[in-house]
Length: 355
Image (cartoon, rainbow, N blue to C red; front, side, top):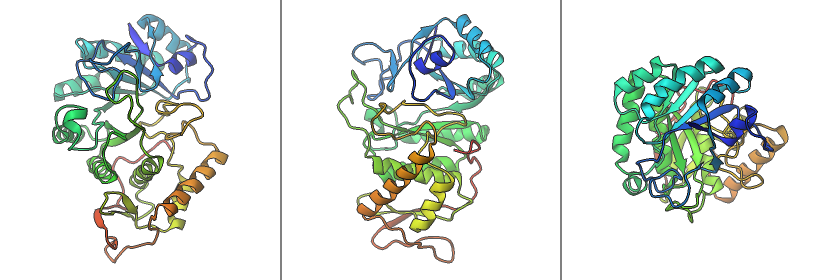
């Protein structure tokens, strides 16, 4: 058996639920009880209750052959197929068996979230028809990584960067904002990954019942918006020269851009949509319908302008600096703050989906 998100099954005609936004990627999950114990994940081995959810989404089981038939019967329904996996026995073997069948039936590019610790595994997945391999880092803080996810952030970065060096343009990582990291930690990790040619998929932490973090809060919206904006600057870095400056509380206080420049970029590219592989919109993966929208699954002109205005207003209220502060080398100065990175160069792994 394989599991599929409830939205995926609805698009394929295998379930019937009302959806405010349909998924543009087909989300599948394979694997049994996870051997890992990430304190925020509903699939962790010590989670109380059932393990039917990943983030906010339910993943019913579906027969593999029935799924193949449904994909073949719905050409053009999706832009991509994405496999999520648990750390459990037999997952790699099942991936090698199922990926070619799904790829052939759907004709779609395939992403796989799998911790390929050996290059031979990555090679086999790519040979099986996988376009992108995602290795989740999740936690952006070296301070918190051992207790929240297990292991070290340093080791996770080495794994992801090594894979990206061997397979440029085909590696993705997932970062979850709201696990206790500060803005500086998240920004530095995002820049390090993007400069290594790794596509960053950004998620907002969602408390899940039964996990150790079930009573924790999602991230502040303004902090999340600033990091979304930073990813946009990296994606479209050839359009604006920028820098990132933080204050002594490790909060981002300047991008070295004026308000006009920031609004212009946001009007050209609405950066508050889901950020992931091309064709991924993850509708309501981390949000409840009617609640705070961290990642919009689609762009609506009336919604976009309101969100841009609110973001700029919230920055002003928070004391954000909009003034351009570039010197002759394109670097920025920041009174009382700390320059951490310089942008503006063309990124080798820029977005291609127009998001």
